[in-house]
Image 1 (cartoon, rainbow, N blue to C red):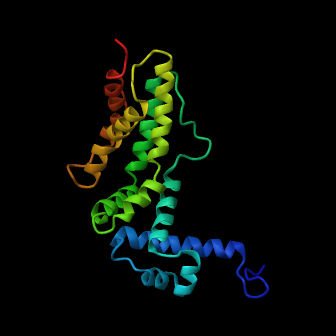
Image 2 (cartoon, rainbow, N blue to C red; image 1 turned 60 degrees about the vertical axis):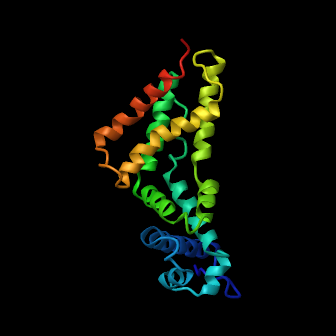
Length: 211
């Protein structure tokens, strides 16, 4: 079956494939060379399309970057049907969430994306805004805060601000392993990475439990 409709319009499948090719090229160029050094011309040349075709899909480079971030985050999410809040108690729930979050944060694309943001946010402050809109941290905070709120209600832990506590837990899970993966210290071994979620969870809960 032809992928071009009468009148020269590409089929939906062909249009989606072209969009994926643009994002593939943009992801490679952005993560390798950075936001400032990656031009729309370079992306268009890589895909062998005209700039007019590019602009038909993305109005500017910031929109392209947002689409790249959105796709990276989407691919790092657990597969559909994965039980995120699963476990017999809060410790098991938080350990599972921490394991999933850390695995995503230490993936090669996540590290490359974080390095790009850190390296270029001073020159391009809009990148931080893109990450805030497209990133998954707020979703994770909401999920963790919900689990904590249930335990507060049941009287098993004591917290005045579950949202604040959830943000701290998220930083405890990600910050040091990610920094070390970026070269700020020796990268963690596979064993250290495996032991990190239960250690962080135990330390966090020791500060939350009622006495």
